[in-house]
Image 1 (cartoon, rainbow, N blue to C red):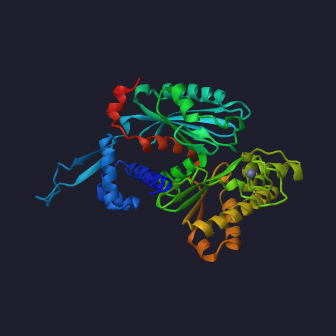
Image 2: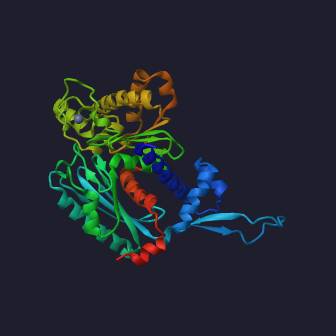
Image 3: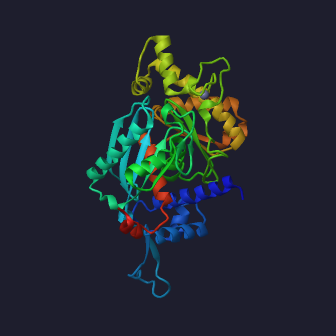
Length: 401
Ligand SMILES: [Zn+2]
């Protein structure tokens, strides 16, 4: 079996594990059969994963002790119980302008959170130092003993090479290229640290807890000052040969368009990213708006803001149409800074898809905004840790520093 296929099966297992944890969110009484029904996973898959989660101490199974009236004899029903207090996780999300840090329990309930501005022109070391100190503050805010932390997950805006989280070229943080970010953070925190591309983690978060919970084949688009995508095929993340799948922002849409940060010309990112939309408003109409102000104005009916968002959405939709023709996903989730604008963006994307995709591919794919908001990548980073715990939690605590 190829390494890529193995990687994707492994990702399917990890996303399914998160879907089970999510299904038990409402601490109701649920059996393995209930979980299979709710998640759409097969019974054998649920059994395997429940056994795995039991072995690390995140799930327990309790036989019902009180017999239901009129139901004597037979096997008592067995219900699953999630033990979210068995440990804690740390999530770190870097984007072009800020870093966010959160501490959660193992059910991803956030217990402490910090946000700080990030200077994208500074070297990686300064950003990593800042995030490490924010982790200590967030742990103190949450009152979480450091020895209970099972690990930290990190979302980074660029292609990421495993296992040390080396940041590839074309990152939106130029001075981070070549830095082994996960290894560097491991050294600073003295904790296990895993890192992945921000759009990949957005796709995992929306698939496990958000808009794509039931879907198996998903295109997640992160539309911010850059444009990236996470591709989920048969319930697992598809990374491609060198971990570079989903570089949607660098598909060329205008051969004679503006020069892109990747060194080529006319990439989607130069036309449809939030930076590109803001540039058009400034150059054409002399209006210097933040992304939030642009969204608010568009929602209030401002024609100029609606125009630039519609133009960007149509350019994005045309590229998404090609992806639909190639991959035939069932769901397209539009996340990132612009997603709060909702229908204005989704309608534009859908109109382009209707024009440019094969009718059958377009008919099978729904387009929806992401539902996890600006914490999407943070949830993805926390989910990465929780999906990757393989040692019994009790053992981890005693061996932690
Ligand atoms: Zn480019």
